[in-house]
Length: 242
Image 1 (tube, rainbow, N blue to C red):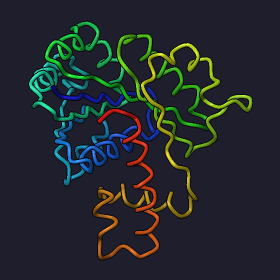
Image 2 (image 1 turned 180 degrees about the horizontal axis):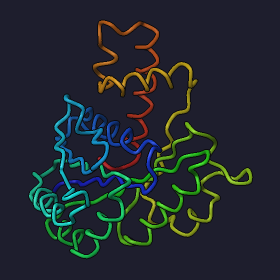
Image 3 (image 1 turned 90 degrees about the vertical axis):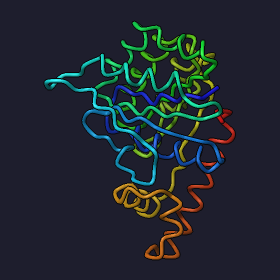
């Protein structure tokens, strides 16, 4: 029995690949076998981390997304090793295509017949993209009503609030809360400090472990990264997805 994690969001540039990268490391930290597939045809961020066991999946043909390319993914997920975790990081440009493929090919029932657990992960971000990320989450909830969703709240771009009300008071939460398996709120630190640290860490395609233990990392940066990473690990552990 494997656990499959689909990272999906129709809005680009909101931290989706960052979530995939952190989830991969958290699962590995808790000594679980983890592999990953990167289906982003534009920015295969997860696959670019050399420390990770992530396979890029080319879903393009003649400049367009070829849904038959997802057959390879289905085959791999159905045969995922027992007790392993598999992450599927999907780009915003292929969000609709993958969602349609999952529905049209009874993808999820096939996985469940094999005894696999399936979680969808989506991101809600503050600022100008708040409305777009809410729409992406709503589309996912409507399209896959039987699948548990882990909602990641990313306040980096602004408060996740509407008229002073937090996410759990949003209409989407009230409409689909029964589908939301867990809410994970990313820690919000000083953008000039930990924000810059994280930006540099991901730009170098380094894991938290490499950044914290790196000989070229300053003591202050190591301390901030360690604190942030411990907060992420605590959130993932409490989410009930391991």
